[in-house]
Image (cartoon, rainbow, N blue to C red; front, side, top):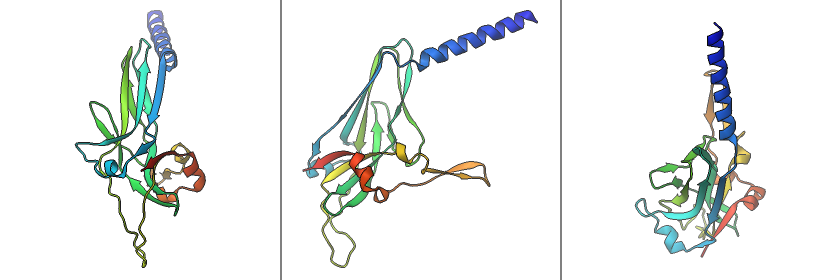
Length: 193
């Protein structure tokens, strides 16, 4: 019996030690680089085979253990700063090995970085349709002059609602049109030239 207790204690010590070492952020750095401008021609030429990169996240792990990095949950929008018109854009996190669409909920997208290595994750647009007309009687032309990268961390509580009947979470869709001026001011802004 004493032998079993000793084995359990050793296992607990090993688990606690590994968890403590893994939670240490020493040797782990992240650099985020966003393009300042993009041409409308380049933006509208984005295709599934030839995506347009608007942001890169370089993750460096100089630690002796592999690490997971939770990528920022963001919403990408086209924006007309004059008329305050906003439009949703489909964006993807892309690595050499995979492409993951951004979700509109608080589900974490992770990038695993092996020990003593680095990984680059790109935020890309694979297809952008830029509508020229708004459905109004005047048929006003909308010229989008910015791309917004809006962090959804402020919306995590608003993105889910509890479904008590089924004991699960329902995810809500967040539209660019729901963002206030304060949220837009905090967003990363890329000028369309």
